[in-house]
Each structure stands twice: as structure tokens, then as C-alpha cells.
Image (cartoon, rainbow over the protein chains, first blue to last red):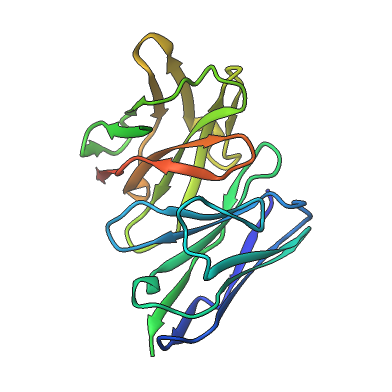
Length: 107
Length: 119
């Protein structure tokens, strides 16, 4: 299995802050990484696919980068609607895996 | 419009078999590069990918749960069915189905169905 490790587990930030979340894969997954946002009681929402492609309808303040084993999700200017939990997901090969999640909370 | 909806029992007992149905519309699972997956999330915990069925009827499973899972498609009904055997209280979770098409991630999810396993 490919393990996905996110850091940090929790992040405290203020409106307008630049926020960066890291996801590391235990082996190379090329660009086959997606990022999701999840709010309590709701299904996850796709933000980024293929490491850096912005899903249609997602605000441009979200961006993704990286390849192989190291990836980042950046929110350029945190907005009130962005307080949520974020997950990375590997979809390389036959067995897919999620990271453990990063909760973005208000400082 | 693409939609998915999960259905199944809210409560099962230990050792029983769980059967969940994902009813979808707005796309065809026979379209090249389409797939439907099942994902679960225990209360307060992370997402866990369980299984997927692809447009060519290929099936793939989470290795740690493979022995207990079966995924299948009812083409005529636009449904994907997941069975999980030998249920345990640790399997208590919200179970989601989701669509993936081409190089994208899971772009559309169902609302989820909560399953509680009693001992």
C-alpha cells in the first residue's frame, strides 16, 4: 500500500492568511493526487486533481503543486468559507489511499 | 446532472453481511475511463477508500479489506452494489459512493449513509 501523510494535522489561521498543507506519499505516485475539502456532516468536495489542476467552479485562491512523493495545497488568502478539513488522495495504480486529514481552524 | 445516492440499512449486527446500493444518474458506467468507488469515514476520523468498479468491469479493492468486500454493477438499474461480510463495530461509519472520470479525482459524491454495527 502507498501511505499518504499530511502535515500538519491541525492548522490555526486567520482570515487573509496564506495557508499551506503538505502531503507526502510513501512512494512515487507521479501526478496522481487529488485534494478535497470537507465540512462537518457533508461529503468531500473535489478542489484539485492531477496535483495542480483546479476543479471547475473552485475559487482560484486554491492551488496545488508537486509530483512524485511531495505535494502541497495552498490557499492564497484564507476566507471564512475555507475553515474545514482537507484531505489528499492518491489515485495511482490499483489501490487508492487518503491522507489522514488537515483541519484548518480559526486562530 | 450527475447524482449518486447511497442506500442500505442504518443498523447491522456483528458478523452480519452489509449490502449497500449506490444509485446513480447523469452518466453511464460503460463510458471509457469512468468508475464508481466506495469510501467510508468512521465518526471523527479520516476517509478510507474501499473499492472501485471501472467502465470495463474491472474491480479493485483496499488490500486490507479485500477478503470481506465485493463490488458489482447492475447495469440495467444504474446501480453499484457493495457487500461487506463479517461486520464488526469498528466498521461503524458513513459510507459514500463517488464517481471518478478520466484523470480527475472523485468529482461527484453521494450524501453518504451512516451504518452502525452493534455487538
